[in-house]
Length: 304
Ligand code: CP
Image (tube, rainbow, N blue to C red):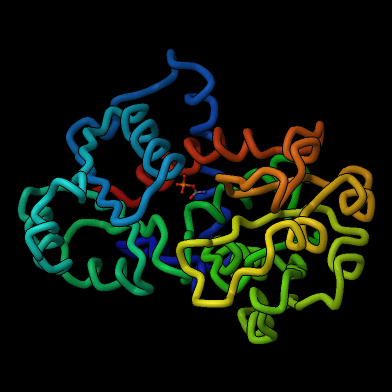
């Protein structure tokens, strides 16, 4: 039973996640074929409120809404009354009073979407809150993995990079754990904490790149969250690329049919070499396409 809001994958069980992924499977045909797009949400409207920058998440929610006939507007935080000092909860109540069904929100503070959800009647979809969660990204990642591998259970997923600041890493760990997959984190000590192992079952921190990637079914890079670094947190970028970047040699440690994934945007040549980004086993562009299908499923399941 899904609740009013989608705030994170922590607390969602395998059945809930499978319901969303199955619905996304139905929706994907409509991404590919405009003739199949419907109007079932044409009486409803959504608003995107992004206090942080975005290309993929915001644009794919916009496309997803349009493919379902749903009206969608963007608050445009930089030109809104937020700039006059309006508080988050007041902005929330103002938008809610206009009768929107869904509020899609990104914010730099952990828990911002939870606060918004408590103050509105509309369904709130968390499009990323600080270092906490990015559930729709993890759902599209899970969808992409399942589409290629046939299942998620029992897979080894190596997640490499800035784990400590990554809401994508956390949401993926919750989702993979719900399916009984193994999540193995690896990155520079400043970007890694043993506490990551307490996020769920079958999650561990690797000792080195070989330990992380050997035999992996999926190799997932993470963006360095430059905007979230504390002082002295960033290693030298050339050294970072040498020690923690995903290149062909790293990929050779994984299974021969391992997928290459990255939530993007990618810092080319730092987190991943260009040949790996554009590798025949890279599904980074498919992740973007699947993001539209998954967000159509989410709008369809959460809007009312
Ligand atoms: N992956 C992701 O969230 O990308 P955007 O920041 O472009 O939305």
